[in-house]
Image 1 (cartoon, rainbow, N blue to C red):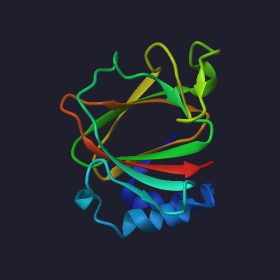
Image 2 (image 1 turned 90 degrees about the horizontal axis):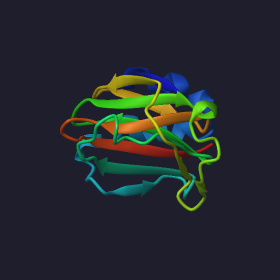
Image 3 (image 1 turned 180 degrees about the vertical axis):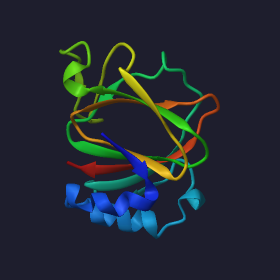
Image 4 (image 1 turned 120 degrees about the vertical axis):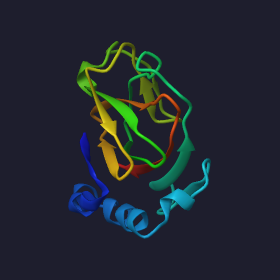
Length: 149
């Protein structure tokens, strides 16, 4: 997991061959102007930008999840989003069912740690990172970039 400010996003370009293209889009696009529910394919299905409007969610309602195929770059736009984190190999139960069509596994219980991610910041979750996103009192508009790992 990486959490940093958007000013430093380019420093992470070497982590994945598709990150440079994602970073170029994020740096040169008015993200706030993108409509909630929109989806932009930058490199076919391997690099996709989704814009979501989340509903209010508590820590108890936020399920830990992992992805096997994709890395998430999550960027809150309209408010603070709290994101939970637990190393994937510590998520329970260990035999949770993987949904290959949606590239997601959901786990039980609360995250081990939580961090507030504010507008102007981002979080990157790799396949080994269990994360519980979307924890807000009011909901937030956010960008989620799906990058093939």
